[in-house]
Image (cartoon, rainbow, N blue to C red; front, side, top):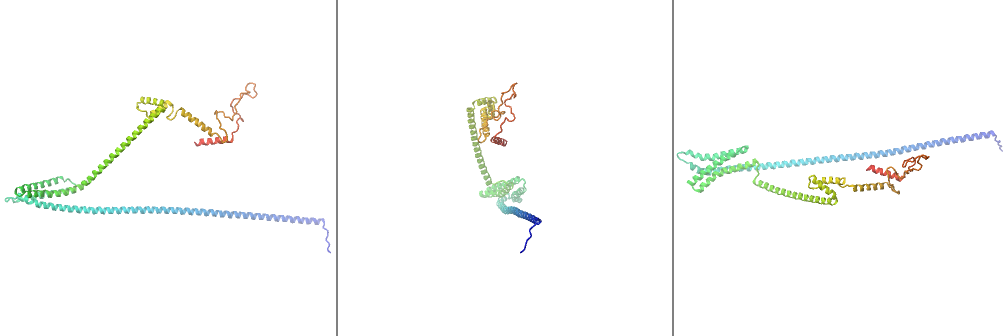
Length: 421
């Protein structure tokens, strides 16, 4: 059987020291573990915060990138739309230019074709006129040659030929003058003189030696040839000078007549409207004068006198204004009663604005005294008074009671509205 020795006091102290040391070691270890845990938690929190911040930054960056990409796409789409619109406008302009050019070319071709047709018709007309002139000369010459025939003077047979050829030569000169834009009337006058000379010879000799039909026919032939040719030249002259044809002159006269009728109708309508407006204005002025005479008899009598003094037959607006100022002392529309009514209305509005919700309106009786300031008293004034003379209405510290919250708010609201106005 084992026997244990009784613990001594020193042994108990050592055991207590060991227990204390172990407890201190446990405390240090636990503190270290707590610090380590706290550090781990702090590090974990910082890491989580950093990760959260990084995620948030990444999300913000992604959103910013999406916005930038969307803005870039929108800008690109707008630029493409503008480019497409510019291309469309350019194509429209090119198409319109091409259409105008084709229309001009077609018009030019039509004008050229028409000019060719006109030139061909004119040339054909010229040849026919020349052929007709030759035919008429062939018809008229035999009678003229018979009139000049003399066996002793056979050379006189050249006289009728000379007359006809002279008319032809002068008419060709007239044609050249027309082409050059020179005076041509004297050429045509000489040609007609030769034609009438030949016609007179044919008519006289035909009536004497032949029959009436021969005389008249050959006389007409002498005039018809130069006449047809001169008619051809007359058309050229009218065309060169730009003179309108009979149909054009008739259309222009009709258009001018229609325009004159429309103008007369418009003038009559305008005159009727002006007359109606003047009548309405006169009626309005008369009604206004009667109303003023009825409502402002004193001002109206003074205005009539003032108009007569100033040399006016009616009461104008300027005279009425001056008469109103002279009688009422104010511009038209205002007088003492009107101003008093306006002032009373403004006072009522001011009183209404100074009323706070749930409170009675403050009646301001003086610009120097308000209900919150107690009225001073003359009691105690005099030589023997200990308090000294009290002046009525003098403000001293503590005399004025503080304003209520509602009054302060109402004053602030009134000041704000006044500043806004």
